[in-house]
Image 1 (cartoon, rainbow, N blue to C red):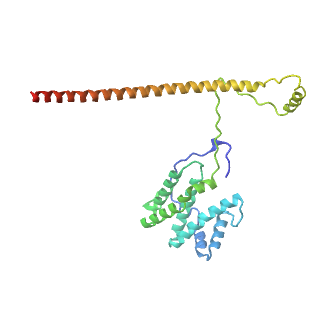
Image 2: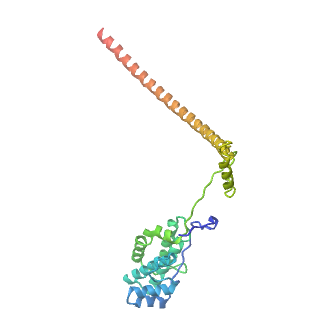
Image 3: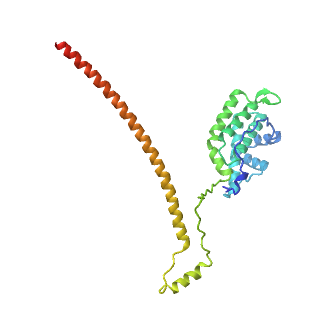
Length: 276
């Protein structure tokens, strides 16, 4: 994976408009050549020649990407041939998968919702007769089959394609506190002579504590004071909330006891009148 240096150039997830793409990536001659070959290896070789992909067993990172994308193209064509699709349908579905993959890998951020919406719109664009915006190329049953195939193959491994084809984004986060001075590190080249000099006069004069440590300790004390102040405020809020809840519970208990005492007094007075 690549590590991107300038995060301002990253593409954010976005919506894309679907359009008819028949014969967009595979011509009639290309589809004929892919359907007429006898072995899967020959079909892979034709696809690698058409799209400039490496076809071999090399383990280099660039060639591994070519191997992944070549597998995607090969199994898409294989699926169309096994389901007896026409040449127009093979070309259209191949372009749908290819362009869906391009939407997936255009950004390193999560865009599975936008990618699947684009795939669904592309299928509908080739399943509804509404020229020039869409054509009726796939039947409803074929749309269902193609959707299930894409979900069980491409979208099931969506994160894998993200990992292979998109750069890795790293966030370098730093904090700066107002009023706290950051100690500057001592220069490396001048440190060695000072150490030797201190070793020579170690028996006669005591070593003076370095100033950056004093500054750091003062900064730490100030930071601890700020944290302690914030914690004290939160503890006071919690105590106020607990006291309020206890007060409400006590008042509710007093009301229940008053009701209970009143009912018992009424019962005893009734019992005394019956005795007379």
